[in-house]
Image 1 (cartoon, rainbow, N blue to C red):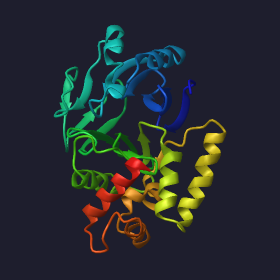
Image 2 (cartoon, one colour):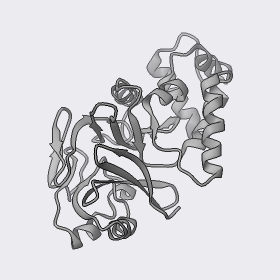
Image 3 (cartoon, rainbow, N blue to C red):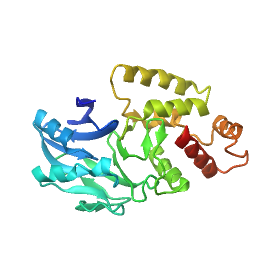
Image 4 (tube, rainbow, N blue to C red):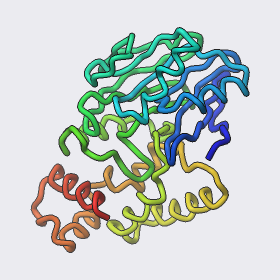
Length: 270
C-alpha cells in the first residue's frame, strides 16, 4: 500500500489516505493548498503526498503517544514549522497545543473546526477529533475504534474503553470513521464467530472482502455501520452474550462491563 487515495471530498476539504508501515493509515486533510496530517507515524509518505499534491503543511494532529502515530513528527518539523496538536495527558513531548475533552480547535490554514473528545482505554490520555458539519461529520479516532473492532487495552480499563466507545457511537450514523489501521477483515472474522446470523455483518464481510481483493481500503466506515456490525458496540446483544457463555468465558448474569472485558480478552487470543 503506497498510493495516496482520495477518500472524501466535502466543502472544499479532501481527506487523503496515506498507507504506512504494514497496516497503518495516516490521514492528510487538505483544501488543495494547505494540509494537516493526523497521526504521522512516518514522515516519508507525508512528504511524498505533500510534494505530489503541491500542498503546504500547516498543522499536525496527534491522538496518542504510540510510535507508529508520532514517529514522523520530528522529520516533518525539520521542514515545516507548524503547531502540533495532541493530548494533554499522554506524555507526548513534541505537542505544542495540548488538548482535552470539550475543547475545539480551528485547524491553521484550513476551514476546519474539530471538537476534542477524551477516549481513554488504548492509552490513558488518548483523544479523538470530531468534525461536525451538515452531511460531512468526520471522526479521527486513532486506535480507539476500528473497523468492526476496538483497540487493545494497553493502559486503560474495560470500563474506560466502553465509555469511550459510547461517546463515539453517540455521533450521527453518517459520521465517517477514520481509524488508524487496516484491521477490518481480521476483526470481521471474529465478529462473525461471536454473532452468527447478523445479516448486516454478513453483508459487510462480503463488501469489505471485495474491497480488499481490489486493493482498496475498508476505511472510512461509518458510525451506523459500526453500530450494526461491531461486536464491541453490541455487548448487550443476546447472541454475543450467549457465544461468550458457550465458550466458557462468561456467566449468564455478567454485567455489560464484564461482557466487554471477556469479549476483548477473547479477541486478544482469537
